[in-house]
Image (cartoon, rainbow, N blue to C red; front, side):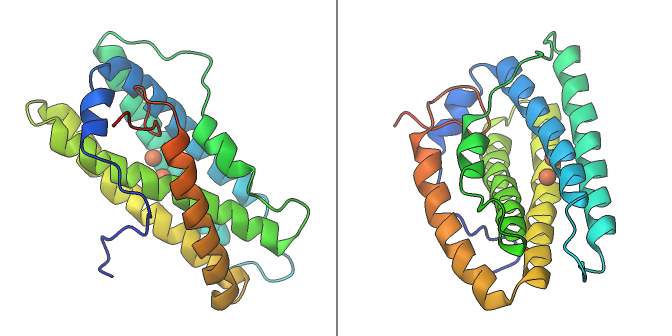
Length: 204
Ligand SMILES: [Fe+2]
Ligand SMILES: [Fe+2]
């Protein structure tokens, strides 16, 4: 597997980006909320370091992700405002909510690796979608630059979350759980309703 490959087990059709971009402001609003959630999630994870031996780079990794996500939020919400859109107060994310149901709560390190893997899955799926969006917005240089830039950043985050999980439990255990999580994510993303959202399903 090359560095740029994604492990996902459901491949979103290119048609998804066409549908999502029919309502670009709604898509940017959804996207801004996801960046906000990603920043919050990194700070929440920061507090959950495993005792007595947290990964050496735990705090540095989480603060780096949080800082990136805040920057992404600023960029996306600025773009949304400049294009005449408005950040809504309310935002639902059924995809992430369903993923979080997979967390084995109250199970110490197992709970923590589940949370890290769900974060990794969301990053990887976003990456996949940014690539499709970047390819689709050929005549909009600003959006193309946004989506291409985010691809690289979120890909780095996906790797970071997996590497942290591998420092918490043995690679073999992490690998087995990752395998289950990848299957679950592939099922779940396909069940999402279509619409102008980063983690929407696809009608075709
Ligand atoms: Fe981000
Ligand atoms: Fe990210």
